[in-house]
Amino acid sequence: MAALAPTDAVQRVLDNLGRVSGDQQLPSDAIIRRLDDEYRRLRRRLSGEFPTIYEALSPVSTLVGSITSFAKPSDCETVRVCEKQSGAYWTSVPVAPSLNRDEIGALCFYEQGANIVITPSASAPGSYRLYYVMSPPTTVTTYDVPNGLEGIIIEETSAWARQRHNEDPTFHKQAAQQIWTEQYMALWNRYGSSGQPGLQITRVW
Image: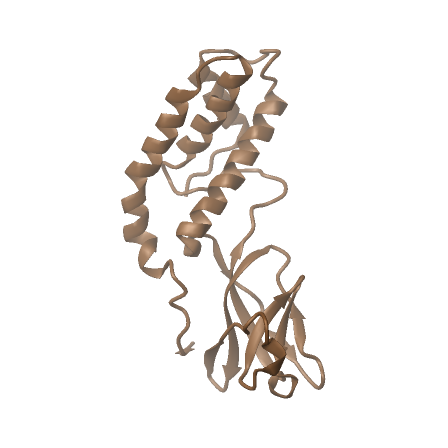
C-alpha cells in the first residue's frame, strides 16, 4: 500500500500545476481538504470494486437471554458477512428480507442503525462476528491506497485546482482515468477473486 502523507501530496499537486506554495487561490489547507475528499472517494470506489482491500474482522459478540442485537464496529461502513459460531466452526448467517423479516423462521440478520439484529429472537443466543469494509477515517494522516493509485488523488485534486484558476482540467482528468485503467487488471488479479462475498461458506480456525 502507498503511504503518501498530506504534506507530500500538497507538494506533488503544486509541482503538477507548476506553482509554488503560497498561491493565494490554493492555500495548503484548501488543497489538503480536497486531497482528503478525493482520497475518501477513491477508497469507496476501491471498496465497491475490491472490498477485501479494506476488509476487517470484528471482535466476537455474544448474545444471551432475550438480547437480539449487537453493535457494529465504529469504523464499519459495509457489512460483508455475518457469522455465528457453531462449536469449532463459523457459519454464515443470511441477510433477512427487507419487507417480511419478522416472519422468517430461519436464522438471519439485518442492520438497524448502528446495530446488527438477529431474528428470530428464539434463535439469537450465541456468538457472532462480522467481516466488514472499514469506512475512510474522519481525520486523514496518510493516503493508504494500493501502490500507484495515489496518482489518482493527485490528478483529481490537480483538476480541481485548475478549475479554481479557470484553467482546463481535462488533462488531469484523463491522467487519473489512465492510472485507474492501467492498474485495474493488477488489482483484479490480486483482489478480484475474493471481491464478491465468497466468505459465505463454513470455515474453521
